[in-house]
Structures are given as C-alpha cells and as structure tokens.
Length: 55
Length: 395
Image (cartoon, rainbow over all chains, first blue to last red):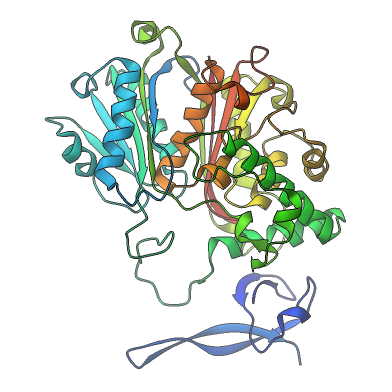
C-alpha cells in the first residue's frame, strides 16, 4: 500500500506503508515511521523509511 | 519577460500517423518510415525539401541518428527530444520555433515509440542510477490517488465517482471504435467497465491508457508559405510548456485534485491564442487521458468547467462526440493507445483531420463548421511533479 503521508508540524512524504491491512487504510489514518529493508541485490541490502499504522 | 507565443506565424502543411497497435511485424524504422512517408505525401514534399528534423522518443532509442538512418538523410540536422510523455508535443514545439525564428523554411516533427518486443510488457524508463530510496510505484498507482482525493474533497461517493470514471472510458472507447487507427476498437458500456477488477487503487486495467507502438509526424512551414503546400493548412495559435518543480510531492497543501502545471500551461496558451472562454470557443480538445481520473481533473484544469463540477458534466455527456465540447474524439490515450513519443503528435493529427473536415462522418465532432479552434494537451510525470504542454491550432 502506498500513501501520501503528512507530518505533524509540517512536511510530506509519499511513501510505502507496511504491517498494514489495505482495507484499514483511509484518508486521515495516523501512521508512524519505521526504518525498513527495501531491496536486496547481490547480498547487499538497501534500507529506507516506510510508514505503519500508529501503535 | 513574457511568453509571446508565435500565433499565426507557423502552419502545419502535412501530417501522417500510423495505426497505434502491438506492431509485432514492425520495428522502429518501419514505424518512422510509415509516419514520415505519409506526412511527406500529405505536404507534397520529399525528405530533401525538409531542412531540419526533430525526433521525439521517450525510450525507444537515442540521438538523431535514429531517424537519419532509416530515412537515409544526408547532411540534415536531426535533434532527438525527450520530455516524458509530452515528448511528441515537445518535438512539434521545437520544430515550430525553429521555423518561426527564420532558421529553416521547412521542418518536421516526428514522434515514435516501439515498446513491444523490448523485453518488457509496457513502459520501462531507462534505469537511471539512484540511491535506492526513490518510489517504485506504477504510473497507474500514482494517478489512482487522484480518485479518492477528488471524491473526498467534493463529497462524491466513491461508488458514484467510479461510475463517472467508467463513463469517461466508455466515451473514449465509443470514439475509438470509430477510428481505424485506434488500438482498441470495441465499445465498452459503463456496466462492463464498473465490473472490472481493480489493479491499482480503485482503477482497473480499463481505466488505463493502452500500451502501443506507433508513430506520427508533422511538417511545419512559415504561415505565409503555407498555401504553396496545401489549400487547408492548420495554423499554430499557441504552444505552451511548463515543467513542474516537483514541489507537490512534499507540499502538504497539494491535494491531488488538480495539476497546477496544467493550469499554468493552459493560461499561457489561452493568452497566446487570445482565448477567453475555452468552453465556448474551442471546437474540440484532445487531452492526456493516461488514466480516467486524469481526464476528469483536466476538464477543470483546462478551464472547461469549474473545479468540482467536471464529474457532473461528464455524466451529462458534455464531452461526448455529440456534446457541446467533444473531448478525445479519436479515442484518446485510452482507446487510441499511447506510444509515448508519438502521442502528442497523434493528438494534433486528430485536430488536423477534424478541423479540416477529413474525419469520417461517424466520428465527426458536433461543433464542426461552427468553431475552428482545437486544443491538444499532453502531460508527463505524475500528480505533484509533471510537465504539461498545451497547444491551440486553427484551420
């Protein structure tokens, strides 16, 4: 699931969601950032930010 | 500083356009030869009469040699142009400005894309090295976000909005079914379209443009020379282009229900052409319906109706072939197909046919004989970061 995430205090990042049921996502859902593995190629991992529902 | 435009200084005197399709039996060279050959014939000139060439292709090849080789051009300048999905329009814009400057008497703009047999199903931009943190979304996913944003902002229930989007696709299929050059020639009902399974957000495959191979070409000369080539030239009234700065991706005030780059390029084009009320002055529009929500938003961004009202206008049939402002009478990207580098010129080809009375009767715009201006709109990129072209042409 992909979402446009706006931050409290300003700022925006279009980003992938993770650990989420697509049916539970709606405009206005609150999420938090989590640093995750994005891709692996030739044994090299690439990490970047994703967002998940706020716990 | 000002955008002056080149109204009535340059004319199109010949055009060609291949069928857009999965051309398994044709390579890039074949498509280029077909489109340019038709344009040469249309203008009554040979390749040697053309002083300079602009070739638009997004990803099928690089450099002007791509055109010089199959046409066996000798000693001619050929410029390869790329500007996302607005590549074909950009080629025409450069050729027209070159003629307007006095640098050349006759110039040709060619657009082409050959995606089948490339090893990929569909579009695949040249992989430019990056740090691995850029988004990996499909174009369908990016544009799918327009639908819930629009529904949310204007209070349209999503089920109802899906019917509106299906109505747009149904209209474009209706028009494409009457166009022998179109990729998809089958009419599709709103009911059939609404029953399709989603592939990205709420969009189904039938909300997406067709992926096709194809080529289109135009020959431009100074307006005062135009009648030496044809009795029915198409005069360039406006050419505008805006490259967004990508700010929409990080700006929380951007709401995905409008494309500011389109609004800006439309305003520039209308000023160049002296158009004050596009809805009543334009005979037709060819717009960049890469996905159905895109066409919905474009009706508002191009000034055809007020923000928040396009969905009602669509349902009322305002943009049908028989409506008061026909939009995409050739079937649009949806039904005609979208060979990226060729699409901008394909749109102008439809204006060329319609305004000069050469479109077949079953596909003729309702405004024929009453209005004489056509708009073409071609965009590239995504909501929040796009390039936008708007052209106005008149018989």
